[in-house]
Image (tube, rainbow, N blue to C red; front, side, top):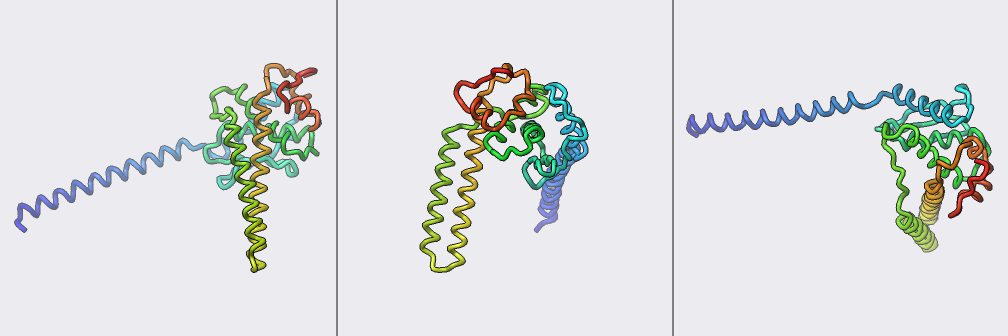
Amino acid sequence: MGIFNWRKKKQREQQFEQRVQTVLAGVRASREVGKAEEESEEEIIEKTKNYIDLLNQKLGFGISEEEYPEIRITKHASSQYSPDSNIMVINGVSPKGDDFGEEIGHFLRRRFVPDSKERLTNEFFGFIGRRLLKNEIGDQESFSLEFENRTESLQEIKRKKEKALNYLDLSENQQSKYYRMYYRMRAKQAMQERSNILHHQRGYYFASRVDITKIHDWKKLFTMPDQEVRRRFFTTTPDYSGL
C-alpha cells in the first residue's frame, strides 16, 4: 500500500472514530438530561401528600394528617394502596396522575369504610379518585380517563376463561402428578387474571359514567355501604339524591 493510500485510510478511520464519539457523547448527554428531569423519591412523596391534602380540603373529607398513609416509592411494582397497613406505594418511574388519583381514591374509600372487601366498588372509587384529582389539577399531570374499549375487555375476559379451561383439560390428561398440579395452578392463575380484569372493567366503567358536577357531598358518597353504591351507581340511571 502506497504512503498516500495509507494516509487516506488513517484519515477515514479517524473521521469514523470522531463520528462514533460524537454519537456516544449525545447519548450520554441525553441520559444526563433524563436523570436531571426525573423526580426524586422525596419529591414524589411530597407531591403525593400535597394531592391528598388538596382533595381532603377541597372536598371536605376532614381527615387529619395523622391519618394520612405512609407513602413509599418503588420502581419494581405497580402503584397500590394497602388498607391493612395504611401504606401507599407509588411507582416512581415517571408516575402519572392516574397513579396518584387512583391510590388516593382507594385510601379515601377505605378510610371511611375500612371493612369494605368488595373489589367492584373499590375499583369504582379508584377511578373516581382519578377523575377528582384531574378535576382539581387539570393538565399538571398525565391522565388516562377515557375508559378502555369495553368490547376488547370482554374479549380478553373470554380468552382468559378459555385458557383456564384448556389448562384444566391438560391437567386431566397428565400421568405425572407434578404436571397435573402445574396445569391446575396455571388454570387458577388465568381465572384470577380474568377476575381482575372483570372487576376493574366494571368498576371503571360505571365510575366513568358518574356526573361529578351533580355531587356536592363527597364524604357521604365515600362512606356509602357497598350495596348502596352498586344500587345507585352501577346502573344506566345513577341516583344522585342527597349528594
